Image (cartoon, rainbow, N blue to C red; front, side):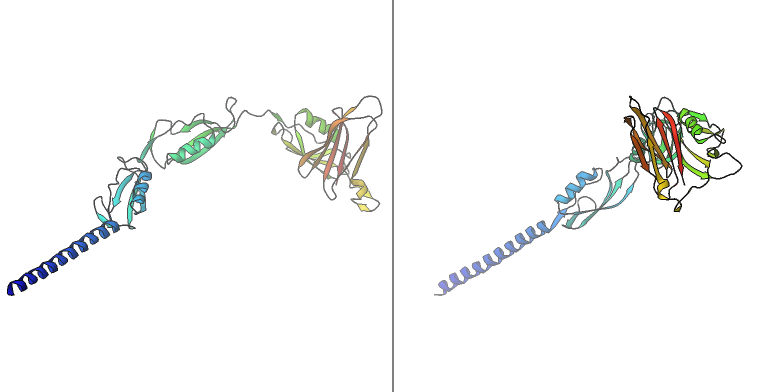
Length: 322
């Protein structure tokens, strides 16, 4: 009987030990898997490019935090200079890995910008962390407007990043210019013909009145006589003319209506009617018209304006409206 009890006791003891060992083994195994799922070993990141580092850390469920950017002689631009925590450390997932990214070498060899247009040159300077310096524009017959002609410092010079680069830029070929003719004292029709001859446009016409001077003559001009002026530049004239008074007082609506009947005949006329108003010239008609046709135009009320009618390229009528 005692032997039987001893056998049962040994069996129960072995069962208890087995259960304890199995329980401990399951506990440590579960703990290991739980720990391996919540933790990760930080990989070596220094020297790697920023894009691949972002992908690598993202795959490990780690956050990327950039602490700053620094110049470094030995680490290429956009590559990692330093990391924290260091490689090999075990950290929990979801933690931050802090990086310092390289801005490249602190110096750069100046690229050659000559021949490039201005936006391209600015983009190259920005890509090399170089600042825009002084920009000087000059006329150049052999280079279009906005083309870089020269730079300082010269191409190939080694400079610190953030240093400024001065550019000499083309303004394009010089526009033909003239010595501004003297129009004061000329009748308005004659002055307009002179402006056409020199390729100048009418910016505006206003009126002044000086009883000592002939009516409808130019008494003031801008630019002044003798001043250098480029082709297609606008000119402002002040013409001697007293204010018209209609039946309803100054600025009568009937006075704002321009009417003209083309000469009769067999051939069409080339008609061009221009209005100078608000500092610009507007073409109202520019076409072939049948003989005898009546043309008209309304000048906006309260606007200073001038109308010029050209018939077969010859100025035939000029009217000023106050």
